[in-house]
Image 1 (cartoon, rainbow over the protein chains, first blue to last red):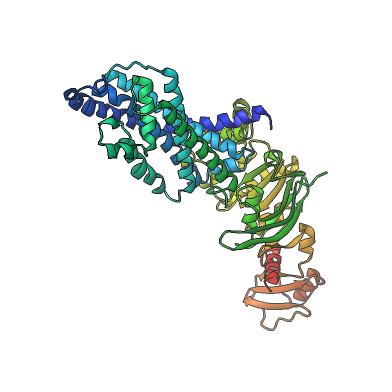
Image 2 (image 1 turned 90 degrees about the vertical axis):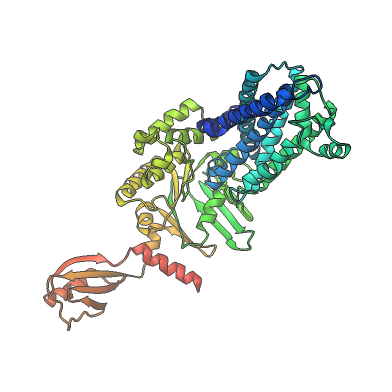
Length: 257
Length: 305
């Protein structure tokens, strides 16, 4: 198969994914905009105005990068887990499986769809952020790298979830009981330096802390964790999940009987 | 010339331990219209599932036009499939469904949209092109699946019970469409529970039962195997209870209906001579059942014993 073939097949998969989340924009793009506005209004404006600055930034400025990252993470994950599971459930995945599209291409197609939604939501949330406060990105290249890496990682995690999900409940359990608590406890609303030593150490076991902290560093220039450690950890999990998902697809887990 | 489909020693045992295929061999020549028949649970869907890469095989090889299906994207590119169940996204429009499917085969979007238009027009779906698939009727959904299977112009088309649940008018229109397609050179493999459909359309036939091929021959040869046919004759007058038909096995179903079994060695002229001699006027005559159906039952029953 030629490069043109691979490009057209990949473009078709990604286009389909983008059309899907755009078609249902009131479920995909609007909720993050509304909830983020509420966060800024309540935590940033009403409560935040009463709080002292954190490492030289107002509270609303301090939480802004975390909120953007939180939305990128949850939306990348949700896009792939929902889309792939529904495609398995309705058997639409068979349209791809009967075609010459390879397992690698399937993985890349769904993952890219998740990345695009994660970044699209990130842009929407960033635009809302700018309505409430001013942000100046200190390290734009690091910001770009961390946004792409995190959306890739959580798209891949959503893929794994969808492969193993047997019913609709299974694609909401992980986001509700794992992803959301880890995100809220991952330093979105506070600096881990404020925590007692035990909780500080425990927080270091939370992978989302590294992502939020690194993104905050790239935007505000302040950090609780070493950048190289965070990037190495995110990179490692991304590569590991990528190959794990590819292996699952090659084995036909969840897609072939 | 390579066969359109060549299957050697194909085996499948599911994780549950159920063995669906015990090692089947099958060859379908290019340009054939081939029927794969079998009772429920015989292994038809598993066979189709493996050919279409939806089921993993336990053993054996499959070649499509000489290319090994396991290692060749080209083999898959030559294959079109119409599955038994609707499996398109119900939230997409027919145009989107067809253009996306074409994209998976590397067909540029512009070309795909043109082909989609042609196919939707041919199959009477053009008016519904912008309507979400969930709003289409059952017959329209079936036609949409046929259009989708053809959008990349496959040389081998596999249809798994394509006319299940559609009315007779649509069924006949589909038969016409498939016959024309076959005449254009597309090899067609069909599974169906309507044996009349297989008898009308197909040149060759294989019957699968309990994971084994129990018959694989031409339709003509298979029908020649039919030892006897049952005919139902109706008369305008009351049939006499003392009716005598020499050398024929028969019975009176009611006062106007006579059921006669005729062996291959016998002919209808003898029967009519005897009826005329007894002043019985026959108003109509018909087969009791579809001829293929009788053979099908016979063959699948034989393989049980």
